Image (tube, rainbow, N blue to C red; front, side):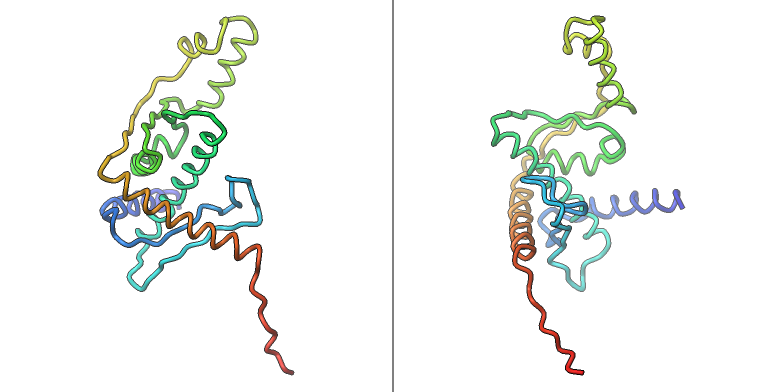
Amino acid sequence: KEEFENNLIKNLTHEAEKIPADEALPIALDWVNGRRTPDANQELKAAISHLSLGTKAPHIFKALVNAICFGSKKIVDRFEEEGIKIEKVIGIGGVARKSPFIMQTLANVLNMPIIVAASDQAPALGAAIYAAVASGVYPGVQEASRKMGSDFEAEYHPQPELVQQYARLMQQYQQLADFTESAVKSPVKVKNLNTA
Protein backbone atom coordinates (compact mmCIF):
# COMPACT_ATOMS: atom_id res chain seq x y z
CA LYS A 1 0.00 0.00 0.00
CA GLU A 2 2.74 2.48 0.98
CA GLU A 3 4.64 1.76 -2.25
CA PHE A 4 1.46 2.38 -4.26
CA GLU A 5 0.86 5.71 -2.46
CA ASN A 6 4.47 6.81 -2.97
CA ASN A 7 4.33 5.95 -6.67
CA LEU A 8 0.94 7.63 -7.03
CA ILE A 9 2.22 10.94 -5.68
CA LYS A 10 5.40 10.60 -7.72
CA ASN A 11 3.44 9.90 -10.92
CA LEU A 12 0.90 12.67 -10.28
CA THR A 13 3.75 15.11 -9.65
CA HIS A 14 5.53 14.06 -12.84
CA GLU A 15 2.36 14.55 -14.91
CA ALA A 16 1.37 17.80 -13.15
CA GLU A 17 4.80 19.30 -13.88
CA LYS A 18 4.10 18.84 -17.60
CA ILE A 19 0.91 20.94 -17.45
CA PRO A 20 1.67 24.49 -18.62
CA ALA A 21 0.92 27.15 -16.00
CA ASP A 22 -1.41 28.92 -18.43
CA GLU A 23 -3.49 25.82 -19.20
CA ALA A 24 -7.04 25.94 -17.86
CA LEU A 25 -7.03 24.18 -14.50
CA PRO A 26 -9.61 23.49 -11.85
CA ILE A 27 -9.50 25.98 -8.99
CA ALA A 28 -9.45 24.47 -5.51
CA LEU A 29 -9.69 25.76 -1.95
CA ASP A 30 -7.39 24.28 0.69
CA TRP A 31 -9.99 24.44 3.45
CA VAL A 32 -10.19 20.69 4.11
CA ASN A 33 -10.11 21.31 7.88
CA GLY A 34 -11.64 24.77 7.66
CA ARG A 35 -10.09 28.08 6.64
CA ARG A 36 -6.84 28.97 8.40
CA THR A 37 -6.60 32.62 7.46
CA PRO A 38 -7.76 35.32 7.34
CA ASP A 39 -9.89 34.76 10.41
CA ALA A 40 -9.99 31.01 10.98
CA ASN A 41 -13.39 29.51 10.28
CA GLN A 42 -13.89 25.77 10.76
CA GLU A 43 -17.34 25.86 9.16
CA LEU A 44 -15.83 26.64 5.77
CA LYS A 45 -14.79 23.60 3.77
CA ALA A 46 -12.76 22.85 0.66
CA ALA A 47 -14.27 23.39 -2.76
CA ILE A 48 -13.24 22.82 -6.35
CA SER A 49 -14.52 24.51 -9.49
CA HIS A 50 -13.81 24.64 -13.22
CA LEU A 51 -14.02 20.88 -13.71
CA SER A 52 -14.68 19.62 -17.21
CA LEU A 53 -14.83 16.32 -19.05
CA GLY A 54 -11.16 16.88 -19.92
CA THR A 55 -10.09 17.22 -16.28
CA LYS A 56 -7.75 14.42 -15.30
CA ALA A 57 -6.12 13.42 -12.00
CA PRO A 58 -2.92 15.45 -12.63
CA HIS A 59 -5.06 18.58 -13.21
CA ILE A 60 -6.80 18.08 -9.87
CA PHE A 61 -3.49 17.33 -8.17
CA LYS A 62 -1.96 20.53 -9.56
CA ALA A 63 -5.05 22.50 -8.51
CA LEU A 64 -4.67 21.13 -4.95
CA VAL A 65 -0.96 22.01 -4.90
CA ASN A 66 -1.84 25.52 -6.07
CA ALA A 67 -4.53 25.77 -3.37
CA ILE A 68 -2.06 24.85 -0.63
CA CYS A 69 0.36 27.48 -1.94
CA PHE A 70 -2.39 30.11 -2.25
CA GLY A 71 -3.46 29.37 1.33
CA SER A 72 0.14 29.90 2.42
CA LYS A 73 0.19 33.21 0.54
CA LYS A 74 -2.91 34.32 2.45
CA ILE A 75 -1.00 33.61 5.69
CA VAL A 76 2.07 35.56 4.52
CA ASP A 77 -0.16 38.43 3.33
CA ARG A 78 -1.86 38.53 6.74
CA PHE A 79 1.47 38.79 8.57
CA GLU A 80 2.55 41.60 6.26
CA GLU A 81 -0.79 43.42 6.74
CA GLU A 82 0.00 43.35 10.47
CA GLY A 83 3.42 44.94 9.87
CA ILE A 84 5.63 41.84 9.87
CA LYS A 85 7.87 41.88 6.79
CA ILE A 86 8.67 38.45 5.37
CA GLU A 87 11.54 38.27 2.89
CA LYS A 88 12.06 34.51 2.64
CA VAL A 89 10.53 31.30 3.92
CA ILE A 90 12.26 28.33 5.51
CA GLY A 91 10.64 25.03 4.62
CA ILE A 92 10.85 22.16 7.10
CA GLY A 93 9.67 18.60 7.20
CA GLY A 94 8.38 16.03 4.75
CA VAL A 95 6.78 18.02 1.94
CA ALA A 96 9.54 20.63 1.92
CA ARG A 97 12.21 17.94 1.67
CA LYS A 98 10.40 15.54 -0.65
CA SER A 99 8.62 17.73 -3.19
CA PRO A 100 10.63 20.19 -5.27
CA PHE A 101 7.47 20.68 -7.36
CA ILE A 102 5.48 22.02 -4.42
CA MET A 103 8.37 24.14 -3.13
CA GLN A 104 8.95 25.72 -6.55
CA THR A 105 5.23 26.40 -6.91
CA LEU A 106 5.25 28.02 -3.46
CA ALA A 107 8.24 30.21 -4.39
CA ASN A 108 6.36 31.36 -7.50
CA VAL A 109 3.12 32.02 -5.62
CA LEU A 110 4.82 33.88 -2.75
CA ASN A 111 7.26 35.58 -5.14
CA MET A 112 10.04 35.06 -2.63
CA PRO A 113 12.87 32.58 -2.04
CA ILE A 114 12.36 29.41 -0.04
CA ILE A 115 15.19 27.54 1.64
CA VAL A 116 14.71 24.01 2.94
CA ALA A 117 16.23 22.88 6.23
CA ALA A 118 18.20 19.63 6.03
CA SER A 119 17.11 18.46 9.48
CA ASP A 120 14.49 15.72 9.84
CA GLN A 121 13.67 17.10 13.29
CA ALA A 122 13.56 20.88 12.76
CA PRO A 123 10.86 21.60 15.41
CA ALA A 124 12.75 19.56 18.03
CA LEU A 125 15.99 21.27 17.03
CA GLY A 126 14.31 24.67 17.46
CA ALA A 127 13.11 23.65 20.94
CA ALA A 128 16.64 22.55 21.83
CA ILE A 129 18.03 25.90 20.66
CA TYR A 130 15.60 27.79 22.90
CA ALA A 131 16.37 25.42 25.80
CA ALA A 132 20.09 26.07 25.35
CA VAL A 133 19.45 29.81 25.57
CA ALA A 134 17.10 29.46 28.56
CA SER A 135 19.64 27.34 30.43
CA GLY A 136 22.46 29.82 29.75
CA VAL A 137 24.52 27.64 27.41
CA TYR A 138 24.29 30.42 24.79
CA PRO A 139 23.55 34.12 25.41
CA GLY A 140 21.02 34.46 22.58
CA VAL A 141 18.96 32.60 19.97
CA GLN A 142 21.07 33.78 17.03
CA GLU A 143 24.31 32.46 18.50
CA ALA A 144 22.67 29.19 19.54
CA SER A 145 21.22 28.85 16.03
CA ARG A 146 24.65 29.38 14.46
CA LYS A 147 26.17 26.66 16.65
CA MET A 148 23.30 24.17 16.77
CA GLY A 149 21.12 24.96 13.76
CA SER A 150 20.47 22.88 10.68
CA ASP A 151 22.14 23.35 7.34
CA PHE A 152 19.99 23.95 4.28
CA GLU A 153 19.71 21.39 1.51
CA ALA A 154 17.76 23.21 -1.19
CA GLU A 155 16.80 26.70 -2.30
CA TYR A 156 13.99 27.77 -4.61
CA HIS A 157 13.65 31.14 -6.29
CA PRO A 158 10.61 32.67 -8.00
CA GLN A 159 10.56 32.17 -11.76
CA PRO A 160 9.62 35.64 -13.11
CA GLU A 161 7.88 34.20 -16.16
CA LEU A 162 5.47 32.26 -13.89
CA VAL A 163 4.91 34.69 -11.02
CA GLN A 164 2.27 36.71 -12.93
CA GLN A 165 0.45 33.58 -14.07
CA TYR A 166 0.18 32.41 -10.47
CA ALA A 167 -1.01 35.88 -9.44
CA ARG A 168 -3.91 35.52 -11.92
CA LEU A 169 -4.71 32.06 -10.57
CA MET A 170 -4.60 33.53 -7.05
CA GLN A 171 -7.37 35.94 -8.08
CA GLN A 172 -9.50 32.98 -9.19
CA TYR A 173 -8.76 31.27 -5.86
CA GLN A 174 -9.96 34.41 -4.06
CA GLN A 175 -13.15 34.55 -6.16
CA LEU A 176 -13.93 30.92 -5.27
CA ALA A 177 -13.14 31.67 -1.62
CA ASP A 178 -15.50 34.66 -1.57
CA PHE A 179 -18.26 32.67 -3.29
CA THR A 180 -17.87 29.70 -0.93
CA GLU A 181 -17.91 31.88 2.17
CA SER A 182 -21.02 33.75 1.00
CA ALA A 183 -22.77 30.44 0.21
CA VAL A 184 -22.07 29.17 3.75
CA LYS A 185 -23.37 32.40 5.29
CA SER A 186 -26.52 32.31 3.13
CA PRO A 187 -27.31 28.67 2.42
CA VAL A 188 -29.77 27.98 -0.35
CA LYS A 189 -33.09 26.73 0.96
CA VAL A 190 -34.23 23.59 -0.81
CA LYS A 191 -37.96 23.21 -1.13
CA ASN A 192 -39.32 19.89 0.02
CA LEU A 193 -40.75 18.25 -3.08
CA ASN A 194 -42.13 15.27 -1.20
CA THR A 195 -45.90 15.52 -1.60
CA ALA A 196 -46.74 12.14 -0.07
